[in-house]
Amino acid sequence: MRDPLRLPQPSADIRTRRIAVNRATIMSQRPLTHDTYELVVACNQDSNIIHAAAGQFLTLRFPGITQPRPYSLARDPTAEAPSQHTFFIRLVPDGEVSNWLAAGDRSGTEIEIAGPLGGFGLDESTQPMVCIAGGSGMSAIMAVIEDACTRQVKRDCFFFYGARTQADLYCETKIADICARWNAAHSFQCVQVLSEEPPGSDWTGARGFVTDHIDEAWIKPGRIDPNKASAFFCGPPPMIEAGAKLLVQAGMPQSRIFRDVFEDARSPAPVIDNRKCVLCDECLLVKPVENCIVETSGITFGSKGKIDGFQSIKPAFSSGLYHNTLFIDESQCIRCYACVNACPHDAISPDYTFAGTLRQQVKG
Ligand SMILES: Cc1cc2nc3c(=O)[nH]c(=O)nc-3n(C[C@H](O)[C@H](O)[C@H](O)COP(=O)(O)OP(=O)(O)OC[C@H]3O[C@@H](n4cnc5c(N)ncnc54)[C@H](O)[C@@H]3O)c2cc1C
Ligand code: SF4
Ligand code: SF4
View 1: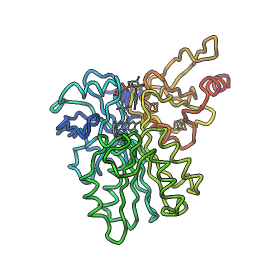
View 2: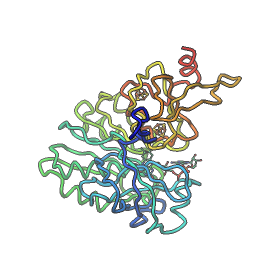
View 3: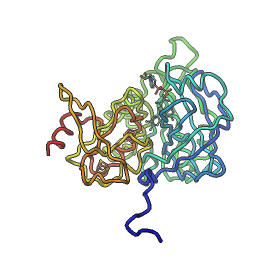
View 4: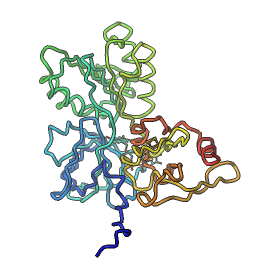
């Protein structure tokens, strides 16, 4: 007979269940430009379906590369087969995944895929949509626009795409198709803006930074009223910061600005302010990496007040409630910022000062 005091051991990953982790296969790797690939990935037959919405992202772990990377879905998931996901991946100099993809066609390779993550996506308003994408930020914006088109939303859409030169433009056929299928009672306009197109080339479209162009050619002449629109940004952090600042100054409330920010290895890891944390576990439920957020029983500080070590607790075997300190291990964090967006108490931010917040907590 089973000893009633010896309960079954809980699973060590009991708190990570909000995201499905699957084995998947790269079905195709197709160049979209000189430095951007479309990757179509299908989850293996025995895996759980990843119920993602347009605008969300998944993490992909490639063979031989220890840490996964976050990638936004480039298509509305309802328009794809249930187990299939499409991504646009732009190569960066000396990036691990970039070099791996650049080395040859990886079709047929088995990878790990996890998600869904992130809260970016279409809002439910009927305000005009101002969509702004830069570089590989085309991915999530295309998914959101495809979703809006399928739903035949009763909204005008202004889609601005910022790239360097004509060689960096892609998805033009897909955009033309969405334009043709957009709700006939409303308008859909796509404007490509090139920042480094050589003077004197055959380019007759807009030039400069995409945010400057929106300001000069659309907001100042009154063609877009930021007071009566929602904005959807996707791409590199500086572009999104500049664009959001512009729209807020022009009168758009922060609450109507939605962002899918492509943080990367250069971005700061977020920090948990344990004074604000109520140990609700929301961040632990979305973390895509096993040990990026750890529950600690103690933190040690080096001579300059910087954290130089911590004692972690095994998740699900003992609770953070006893210790009251969560800690983001910078060396494990993949900068997906899923925890930042999941925290309902504003306790996680890349802006908190590292030593200050944790030291105060540890000292009580
Ligand atoms: C929510 C989210 C969604 C994302 N979606 C997409 C997407 O749809 N498509 C996409 O292509 N990327 C996307 N990214 C970025 C992606 O996760 C990787 O950061 C990117 O692909 C680089 O990975 P890597 O392994 O090639 O480079 P890493 O090995 O991570 O980086 C290696 C080196 O390159 C430098 N580096 C990293 N990124 C850049 C950069 N952009 N420019 C210049 N130098 C850089 C770093 O300083 C580092 O030294 C997303 C990121 C987030 C957080
Ligand atoms: S600590 Fe946060 S930002 Fe870092 S990998 Fe984990 S969930 Fe993502
Ligand atoms: S989500 Fe925020 S409040 Fe909840 S456990 Fe994480 S840090 Fe604490």
